[in-house]
Length: 231
Image (cartoon, rainbow, N blue to C red; front, side, top):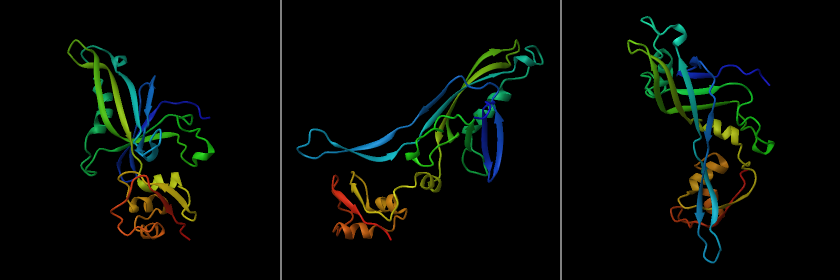
């Protein structure tokens, strides 16, 4: 295990170009929220509907950060705490060259929540959290006699960001060389199933042929579809 250090934010300001911001004080709390979207498939005669996993939802990390510049004095030459808080406020502002706010990675040390997933979860372990700033709330709590803000708390909420290629590599979903059975959820398409099992949405025709589907636009939720192996 690495020695705990101050938490850092790696801010992607350009292609392979990062600004690194070290927090003044390590947060006393980290709050993670991750949900899964489930669909209920109603089958007549059953005591309860069938639950079908649809997809994961974006995880949220909430950071409570404390900023303080009183050690530089609180008189006429006091340093404004906005020199620290603006490092976080800028994360919800658009970078002109990117046309969007930056992607941010929060890291602290190797014992990060999510680093001890079981072997059955493949290579989804993590030692950091990458996302885009969903919100930044600033609360200024102390001022100099001249009104310069000196202390503040910042609540930063990051929403999970992972490109599709990274997700496929991490998930390594059950290999396409095996046959699968899939309970069709409402709104699912054959292209979506091909993307999930073959990683190629265009390969929906073998699924249609294996299940005798003439019109892929007319699918019945709750039907069990055979996903043939790709060899």
